[in-house]
Image 1 (cartoon, rainbow, N blue to C red):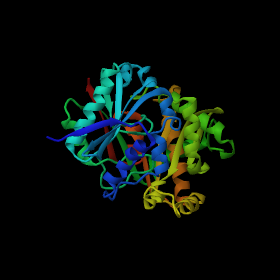
Image 2: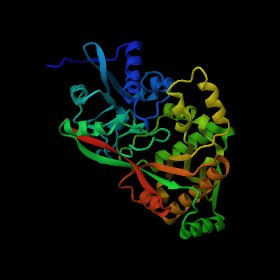
Image 3: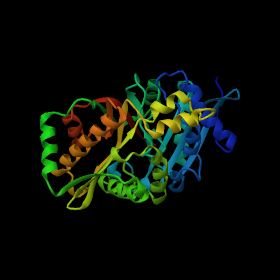
Image 4: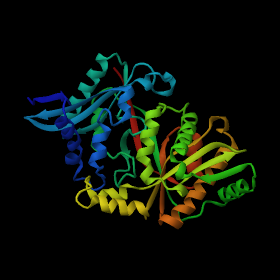
Length: 384
C-alpha cells in the first residue's frame, strides 16, 4: 500500500519546494508558461501577497518515499464569507487551489486533506480550485489546452479536471469563458454605426488613462470595478492593500492607449483595461530573470510588439448596466483600443475574459464583435 505523507508548509525551504513542483510537473507541457519564480514565491508568501491579510491559508506538500509528489493550498477568505450566499460565496465557504500532483492517488489525497482542514474550521462547502483569490487564477481549465494562456490566466493539465471529478461530490458551479477575436478585422457595420453615434454624442467622452497620475487612476478604475462587479457571482471586493498591490504589479505593463475610461456628463462610469500579453515575453525565460532575462524583459517593456492583447477587466457602473448606453460605451472603448493595438503594438489577436458563462450582457458584446470562446475554466462546488 502506498504511503503518501501530507505535511504543512512550515519553512522557506518548504515554500521553495512547493513552488518548484509546478515547474517540474508542468515543464514538459509546451503550452504551459512558467511564471517568473519571484512572482510565484510572492503569491504564496504572507506579508507579500495582501490576500493573506484577510484569509486563513494552509499550504501543503505531499511526499512519497521522501520525494515531493504534489501540493495544494486550502484557504478561507473572510471577505468571501461576508458576501451574500446567493452570489456563490457567503457564510460557510472554503476554497482550495494551486493543485499539482504526479497522479490521481496523490491528487485525491491532497484534496481530501484540504477538505479536512476546511471542515475542521467550520466550512460547510467548498468552491475550487481558486489559486488563490477569485481575482488571481480561478477555475480548472477544461477547454483550450492546445494553446498557451495569456497573461494572468491559468493553464492546468486536462487530467486534473478528471481527478477533481473522480474525487467524489464535486459538481460544476460556474464556467468562466475567454473569447478570442481577430483584431485586424473591422467590427461589423452595426457596431461601427454604434461607435460613430457615440462619437457624435457630446455627453460621452472616451479618454486614455494618465500614467503620470497612476495611483489616482488605478483607484478610480478599481472603484468602478467594485461597483460594477458587486452583484456578480463570486465577487469579493478589493481591499486598500490589494488596490496598491495590483497597481504596483500592473504598472510595468500599463500603456496609456490600452486602458480607457468612459465619462458621461463628466462622470467616470466605465473602464476597459487591456494588457499586452506578457506571457509572450516571459515564456522563453523559463521562470528566471538570470542571467540575461532582466535585460530582455526590460527591452520588451520599452515598446512591446505582441501577437495578443488581453482584456482582463472591464466594468460599467451598475446604474447604467442593462442600458443601451452601457453597450455603446463598451463598443467605443473596444474599438479605440483595437486601433491602438494594431497601429502601435502590432497585435493581430485579442482575448477578452474571463466572462461568466451566464453574464448575458458581456456574452452579447462578445458575440456582437464576432469573437468566439477559446478557453473554458470550471469552478466546482462540493458540500462538506
